[in-house]
Image 1 (cartoon, helix red, strand yellow):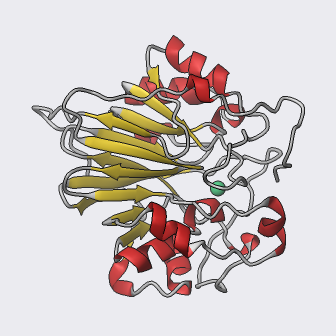
Image 2 (image 1 turned 90 degrees about the vertical axis):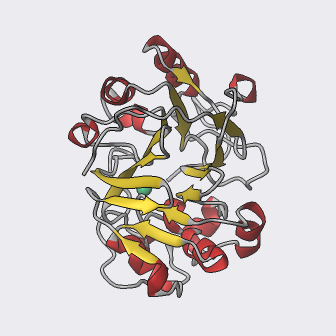
Length: 302
Ligand SMILES: [Zn+2]
C-alpha cells in the first residue's frame, strides 16, 4: 500500500501543467473526480464512471469498514443516469451504490460490482450486469465493456485479487472488495468517443479496431506495463489523453492532492506529446469541454 507523506521520487501535483480545453460549440463536459472517476455530461445524459469521493485515509482504509460519504456524494454528484464501474476494488466501487440509491441511476458493471451494490441495498431494477462485448444504450450514448486485466499495481502484485461471488458485508472492509472481472469502457456519444482505462493493464486485442477522441488513462499503468501509452495511441488513435489515477486518493477531495509514489506525470505528458497526442492534465474537479463531430460511418462494435 501507499505510504503518505514525502518519499524518494515523490512530487507534489503540478497544477501549473494543467490544461482547460474548451472546444468551440462544446456540448460534452468531462469532469475529473480524482482516482479513476469521471462525469460525462451531455444535454440529455449524465454518465458517471468509477466515482470515488470518500477518499479514506490510509489508516481508515486498513483498519475500519469503509463507509461511503453520502453527504459529499450528494453534494458533488446531485444527478446521474448511469454509473459505470470498471472493477470492484474499493477505490472504484465504494461510492457507486450510494450514488445509485440517491439518484436512481442504473449501475452497470461486472457480477462482482452487482454483488457490492446488493450488499448496499441497491434494488435489482437498477442493476445492469455485463461481462462486456455487448452494446448497452444509455439514452443516446452507447456503452460497451471491454474485458481487461488488473495491473500488478503494488510491488509487482495484483492487490486483493479474486471475485465477489455473494454480497459482502456492508460496509465492507478493503480486503472484502476483490476486483472481480475488470472492464474498460468504450462510450460513443454520437460523434464523441471515450475509452476509459481504469486499471494498470489492458488487452490490446480488445482495443483493436476502435477509435477514441479521448482516452482516460490510468497513470499507474505506465510504471507497470511495457508500451502502455504507445499501445493506447497506436490502437485508439485518440486526439486527447486525460491522465487519471495519479493521485494517492487518500487526501480529502478539495485538499491539495498527492501523487502516487513512482508516478511520473511529467514523463507521461512528455511521452503523450511525443506520440502526437494532446495531453489534458486535469486537476481534481477540473472540467474539459468537447464538441461532438458526428461520423458519416460510425464504427460498428457488437
Ligand atoms: Zn484496482
